[in-house]
Image: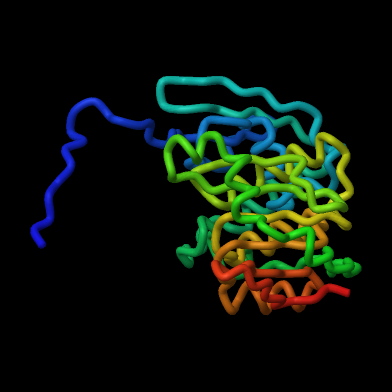
Length: 252
């Protein structure tokens, strides 16, 4: 059978996902430039700041402002002085080290820095995850248009989706959802987040830093993410395409 090209070199028949540069600056000092989708950027800044351990508590984030430039977006985050001093110390300690090439971290030490153990949370009832693949698609308006965005969804105690965020990057989608949940004072320790992506080490570490009880992914986890989840008492579940709930780590 001969492959026939479908010509998309002219006007696009459907929207492609947005991808923009987003610079995060803390107390006037640039810290990181991420590539993300351009929606829910305030949620992203809040979630990123907490899930990366840049502040010790959400109350230490005083303000977030966003400015669009020709090159992308600049997010200005004002944080408590003690956290800012720790951030500057961390940056000084990383200077001169060679990069290990893992997710933007500059060393193995910074990638695998110790995390506080979770207290352990009860597993969500199995019926809460019934039909979750279809249900999460219903909460993906941007993904439905482009077919290329990850989603992170927050389930309540009865299994209903109450919040969802999308992004071209799976870790960005999680940061956005964490930020939105924290703004609404959600108790993450007893909450369940479902992600459309595979489960990688950075997702588990972000979940642990934000004291999440249960992380569910729709693609298989890596061996390192499973080991990290088990060490830190995070419930980690994979929902297979066949609808099987595979429990890899049980927190309680």
